Length: 278
Image: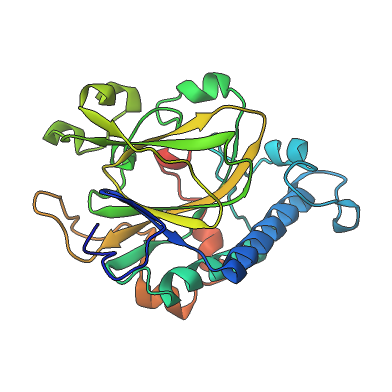
């Protein structure tokens, strides 16, 4: 991590997590494109809604946003044919920032599509006890993500204090926990000698963290947080990390991403079912 970001000015600096400031124009473009996608989702999937009658913002449309049928229990708002054009606009802004600002120089691939995620700060009830609930301390490797991946998290809008993320660095991760599990709780991560990072998420910062940095959603209020997350694959792998025979289909090379991702690809790939998205 330190070597990958050695030439990048950092706003946040921990051993397994780095934060980079987002230019204000890029942040505003991400916010506008994300809201446009949410708006197109409400119009497409909530009966009786139209562009003309929608005052726009997360609070004003909370009820409709939480009722979206294209929202998974973990909060991912999926693009389908009805709203994929608006999602492509958002994806284009995101990938342009990551590729053109040289933030992906240490990576060979990026996840496509990214996860635009709407999370509420209220108690999730039964959803928070699901095997792959993000309310549990976890690494995405336990949900099937590659060991040599980098997590990217960008808060976009909303009440970040009400819906934050806890990050904990383990002293070591034994081999039997470097593979997919059927339930995050089975790992008992609190017994792995954790060092918790003194960190609260902020809008305007892009967070990059190692896949073995444990994390969990912390809900402590009535607010909503809109964020985007995705993974990249390191060019250089650390000894001991398993390399797949072929890259997962949800990853594209940086050259492919820079050339542009088609709406057809985004619509088709969004319905791929993985435990992490459920």
